[in-house]
Amino acid sequence: MNITANLSNTKLLIVKLAYIGDTISIIPVIENLKEKVPDVTIDVMVNRGSEELLEYHPCIRKVYAYDRKTAKENLARSFFYHAKLFRTLRSERYSIVIDFTLGDRSSFVSFMSGAPCRISYRNASRLSHLFMNHFIDLNPFDYHIVDYQLQSLRFFGLNSFKRTMSIHIPKPIDTEIERLCSSSGITKGSLNVAIHPGARKKTRQWHPERFGEIARRLKERYNAKIVLIGGPGENDVVEKVEWHMGSKACIKSTELSLLEMAALFRRCSLFIGNDTAPGHIAGAVKCATLTLFGPNFPHLWRPLSPIGEIIFKNLPCCGCRHEEELCIRPGNSCMDLIGTEEVWEKVLSLLNRLQPAGSPTGIED
Image (cartoon, one colour):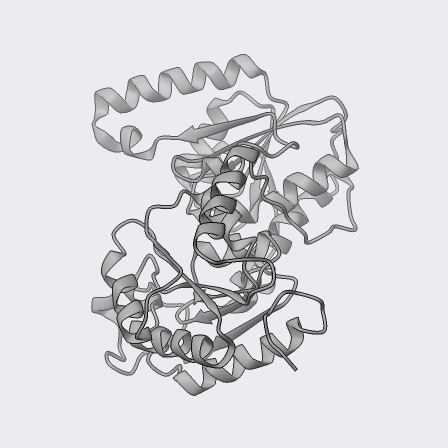
């Protein structure tokens, strides 16, 4: 990393073609970069579906939503899609591209941008080493994903980074969510708890009946206002949680946009969920989090919350590919081993920490 580049008055593109949680993880890079070099122009390319989390960020000039579906649909459509994309990128005349995806497709896009300085990591795919021309030599298992990506800025002689991040919510969306909360009995003085029981893969999901039991205890003991949130296709798991809770949630939805979810979590005292993107959204809007980890390692991926706890069993098989049919411990997996009482104790601990911090918990002495 003895090569340095002058970032002042340059145009820089950051590429991260991955999942929603990955998109959130690049925000600290953007914010640190803009704070240290205010006149740098930062554009970002992320997968379509996650771009709204960045569209209103004041440190970003432009967000490209990479349409992975079109890009892979068939040869003709892929060719025309990429030809148009590459013309657009080249017209911008980027000086620098940083690829945080570390894959073949993203490195090829970086190469075709025409940027003379193309930065990736030593552990990127083999093909990436043909398309990129500067590599950062770090072990990804030694760092939280945010710290791992922040280290790329040392390439430019920058240091002393902040691990904070922010999601900027436009006023119309914030007003809409405020109206929803008001009509649902969710106020600043109540204990508002968001529960997200879903996950992209079944091996990362805790049992919905156990989430329901935690929600029931929160309602009975603290008169908590329960918010049940799911993503597309997660209606069944959300319904199961509500059924085991034994009463209706104040808000129940699987149709919120990512920014609507962020605005809702910002009005919550606590988020409880699996290792998945909503936990990172909650942390980014300064909501306390309790995250249940299964196959992933929390030291790499835990949400950056101001107050946060995790539960992780650290079985020898952790770090697997998360495929349900390949799990070597069916019925006794890493998520199965997380007990209701264990989660409840963590919830109580978090509520005790929240109370003196001045956060609204609705808990009476």
